[in-house]
Image (cartoon, rainbow, N blue to C red; front, side, top):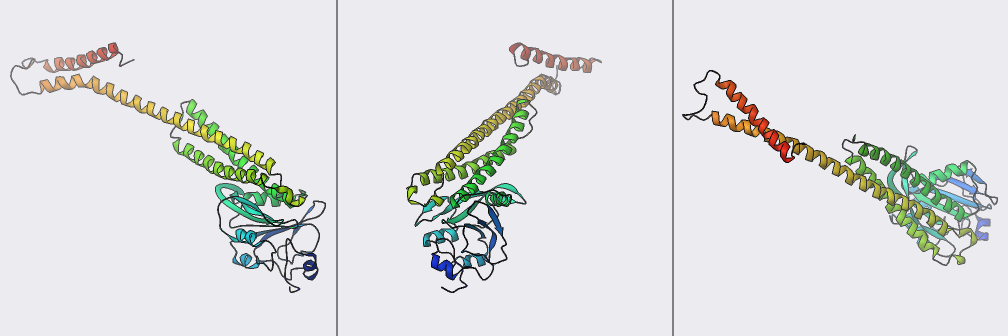
Length: 347
């Protein structure tokens, strides 16, 4: 191994002694942190060489859309199991967690970030974690890792690599919780409009909210299943720094997923109620048109009779024939009104 060859997680002491420092800046690196033995984080400049030989935990976060980062993440630079590196560089879009040779690696979902706020679109964070290093990567800007970065910059302490990854997952849950709160407020506003009979056409808004709930549910259900399965593995074989509290994380995700499912059901019920109101309004309109048609039908019959070119029509020889015909028109409509009133069509 050359003296200027960078090394990372799982490296031997002899390798550290021969490669104490990366000679150049790491390409494609978005940010880097060193977590000291007391848990205090230290932000590292990404445009400067990074030492791998110092004590503590190193977190390197890469932009995997940068081809230079893919070229750097080779066995010569990142000493992790081959399957872990393959998953880190892959484009798999399903969530998973694996352990092999004191290494935890996998893919988890997160929400994409746009100009500082979370969107409803799904992105994926890929990571490889050993006792000394956490390497993560994404193809698009994500919310949870960015929130974790800000927390570390604010002085948040982490005890181990597992604790750092748990912080990322907690931020995933917090981000989705924020989206859920926003959906809940929107549902409250729509429900108020529906119940107060001031609703216009809210079907499009309810459809968007149901879609948001469905997306969040898919992400959360996949993520909590991953942690439930991970909890069932023989985690005692892992080093203490890699033992995640998967059960606690799964419980948090279960509660959040239950809330999302309830809101999805609530939006469905509101959508059904809105459809019923729209149908009632349509039925009322049809009823009004039917009544108007029934009221105008007798006068139409009268005008049709007087419009026939036949002999023996009444009022043909009277000077006031038009007035009598008009009176018949009004009386016929009034008679139709009384009949419909009697049988209950008009209330």
